[in-house]
Image (cartoon, rainbow, N blue to C red; front, side, top):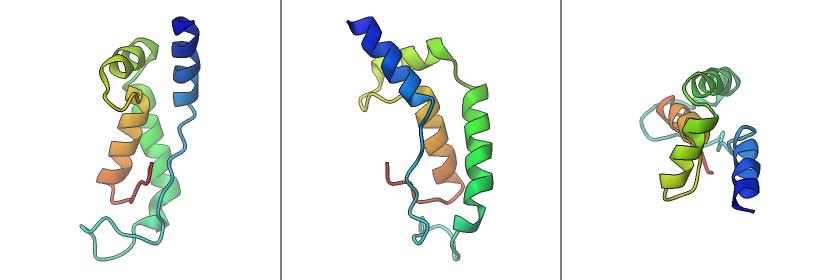
Length: 88
């Protein structure tokens, strides 16, 4: 049962869709960064895919206090560092 749960969680993690507050600003920029959202999302997902795999997702998930995968964590951090306000 645990193995099945791990597989389902990891498959779900590969389809991570961040919720972005497009009207808000991260506080570090004078203007809204939402105009670059689509481009930034594609770049961040590409970076996350290149730097994570099935094994690294399992290992990261097993020690993560929030139970998120490495792919999800990398994508979120990348978008935040590019100035987007991520809600999830």
